[in-house]
Length: 314
Image 1 (spheres, rainbow, N blue to C red):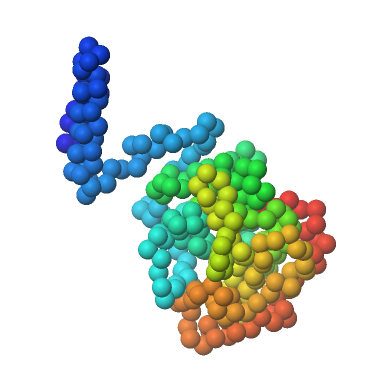
Image 2 (image 1 turned 45 degrees about the vertical axis):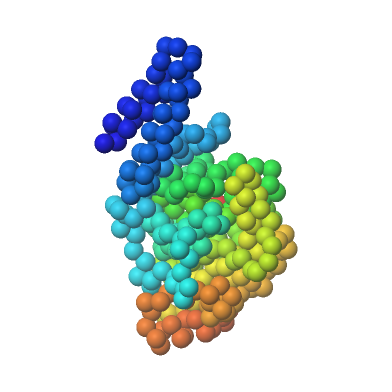
């Protein structure tokens, strides 16, 4: 059926050796395609047929599996909300999972586990390029939306958390793992928190992380051709289960302010209040109460800020 429709389209598009019949052939070709739309795959034409129609020169793409074929597990459970956005879709990658929002064209949240082994390996950032994610439908953000915007392409799951696998690191450069982030924040305080998490992973063996953008009520600045909204802030929550279960949260305004890491510390309960999410829903009731209620810095070893100052954001 699909091949017949395509042949019909081509036949009528290029039909006629005579100029006067050209418009009649073109009109019939357009009607053929329109009719095919109503018959093809429950009234939807697969978007990969016309992906190339809107390409800008130099745009690169990467295909990534959505759920089939990937076995990414997250034992504490993905974040949940009482009200679910119909525009959101969970994308499972090799090293993380992302709840992609087709309205904001960026992730609602990204979740991953981080071990000492994930921070080590042969995978390098050099040569990796930000790529448009062909696994989500149009409209979708591309790397050009960020050009000359004044905002960085801010990783949610960092590339440096995936040195264990070339594929996993490459997938962190998909635009569905990216948010518009203030340059000073991305390269400064947010980078320091990312590096602190890697230190914790090495110290405690394994930690679980969820982070994402925060959109407060009101008008949001938009960037690029696809009008990508700029978040007001970002959250990050971290869970460890050894040597005892503990949790910690961070909320960072999307501005160029700079503060010590402990300035951004919040309890996970507070991050839940601000974002509307329930984090780590598979934890037992007693464990969740302990993990989410405390934001004591005594439960976590913080590395002095000066350790990071010459380190590149990843």
